[in-house]
Image (tube, rainbow, N blue to C red; front, side, top):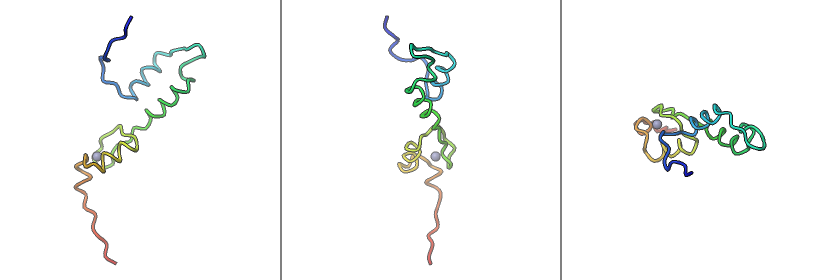
Amino acid sequence: MQPPERPKKEWTLKSAVEQLESCDYHAIAGSLIWNDAFIWIKYEASLDVVCPFCGEGEFDKIGLKLHLERGHCDEYREVDVPCRHT
Ligand SMILES: [Zn+2]
């Protein structure tokens, strides 16, 4: 049997990890929570950095940097930094 082509739900890493954890899957080697790949995914999912300017969320560090540097954040663009003359 083939799995469905597209998931019905819009997943995030975080919601997917929560869903997998709630199912308490077991593999041959033991519980899913001890699986190296799952541990890595859990770590990635925990990187939900919120933009300090606009409050948008669920970035990792690179995502936040792109959000700011590529001009996707209106609040960030509107912050004026006065020039310092010494
Ligand atoms: Zn922002």
